[in-house]
Amino acid sequence: MKARKLPLIYPTAGFAGLLFVLGAMWYAASSQNNTAVYLLLFVLTAVFLVSIPHTLINLAGVTVTLESVQPAFVGQEVSLPLEIMNDSRAIRHGIELVLSGSDGEHQRIDYIPAHKAARVTLRFPARQRGEHKVGTLCLTSAYPLGFVRFLKKFALSQTYIVYPKP
Image 1 (cartoon, rainbow, N blue to C red):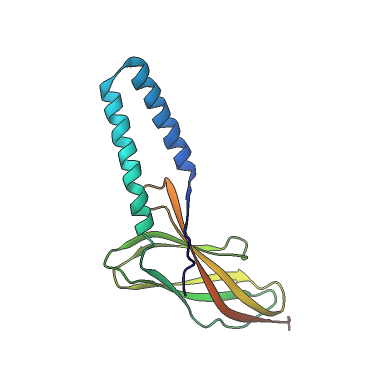
Image 2: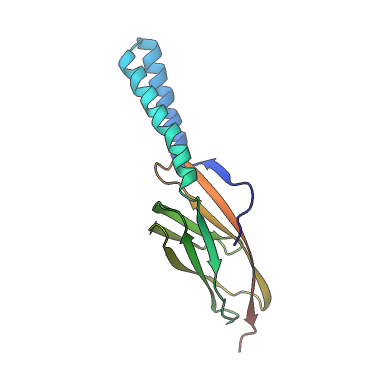
């Protein structure tokens, strides 16, 4: 599947804690004129700034392939078999998959080796009969430090059928 053009980057809850700690360190360093605290403040800020591109790179070269979806009956689970392919030379860590419109059903992939694939099955209840589009699949990653989250969306064009309850 093809990824949409603009990826989303947004802060996590840990980012607010980091800002509080950095603000407190800045206040302590400036009010006490302490160079050691200034040094620690700048080192922590640099580590945070270096982690941003690493978070962006973690989803680079990752593609999603949706395999065939089996029909289901109302009240049963619909299973979406997915293959997440890592086309790059680097290992990918901490990728989470979320299917839009499925009440927050998500799966986490902890590790994808270089040039390998991971198979995941997303399951959600079939509530209404008929033919339905799969929708949008979101891959997110907060690796390595968890201060910012990178979101990559894939538009899936496949449909699945939900039959009436027998």
